[in-house]
Amino acid sequence: MLRIVAIVALLTLIAMRLGEFGSQAGAPLRCEIQGAPTLETKVANGKAYFAANGKLLAADLFTCDISWTWTPDYDVIWLTVSERAVFAIDDVRGEERGSRITALSTARGEAMWSAPVDFSASTAYLHDGILLVQGESSLAGLDSNTGRRLWKVPFEDPAFGEEFASGMVLVFSLENAYTNNEIKTVHAVDVHTGTERWRFTFEPALLSFTIPTREQIVLFDLEHFVDEGFENVSYAFDLSTGELLWRVKDREVVFLGTSDGFGYGMHMIPDGSTTLHSFDLHSGEALWTVPTGFLPHAIAITDRFVILLSYDDSSYVTKGIRTISAVDRITGRTSWSATLEETLGGVASSSGFGYFVKRGSIVAVDFSNGETEWSFRDDSLPLVPGQVTASDAGIVIANYNTGSIYVFEPSSN
Image (cartoon, rainbow, N blue to C red; front, side, top):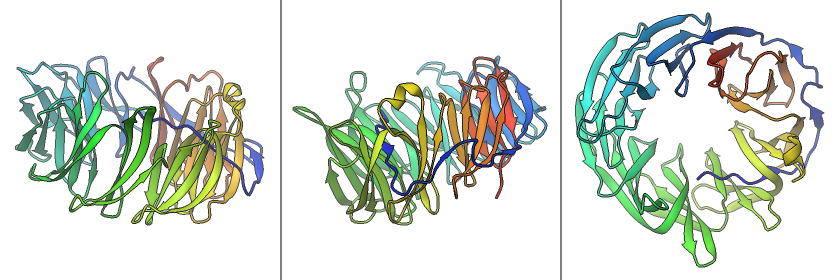
């Protein structure tokens, strides 16, 4: 659903190749966790949490020792983590039997509470101290401290909601859910009471993006059905009232994010490349537009830059040659750029650094100036394909093919 099609053109160019601008030896491989993860690895509180071989495990990121192990009655299909607890959903048992949510202490793994859910739960998210548990046509709010159900909201149509803002969860109901997932209505639901604060029904469309912001504004990017295909339309709503603030046609391919009252997005042009633009979050007015290349990926929005990973030329797609660019958020000018060769297996960012993982190697780049902070290479390590997660406690690379999790030292300013 999320289709990113573009790359950043270089305006103010300081061409540098990764690994060629004073890279330091460093970021040694701290340790390896062997546990055959079968579920997305969550990183929090200095630990990695993952399901493997019918168990849920927590591993210390500083020693790679297994801190604790928990064996559920059924396979864990979803987990989310807070500072004090890991919330796990047991394997779905069908609409008649429902599912079970268990809260485990992050410190020792003992069960703090366990509660049944009278529908087939598939996901769970924590927001404002409330655990939001969702099934195909139901949403429930549980007290994260006790497991007591506070409310439950059924939906007439299949629905999903994974974005939160200002004490609300934004839930989309679907029409023709089993054919083309047409968006029908967005519901803004209070996470504490389950009360619907507002709703808005769209013309038939497919959802591309939902972006809550630090302001009292939420953005939606939809693809409306038209005779010749699709028409991209961007919407901005007041979060507290549901008032439609502005609506802009045919500008976004995808929202990249927002910061300090500005939004950033990309738009495809006829030759298949794209442009990057900034817009005023309150009015939708475009502020600047710069040409970009092909197949971009937004890595991060820092206090100064939009950091993009992209192909300068369409022929580079098959060659695996990509450019990292830092585009000034205020002016749209490119402050620095660097070339990354070889096929990239994963990217993550944390605390102003980007971590670029290739088979057997990882490179850390300082986003403030584009310089390589450190690089590491060991061709014997199968670092990709895998999941890359960056945190202040460590850079975690989980390879689901080999069943290993590798932990690297993070960078720090």
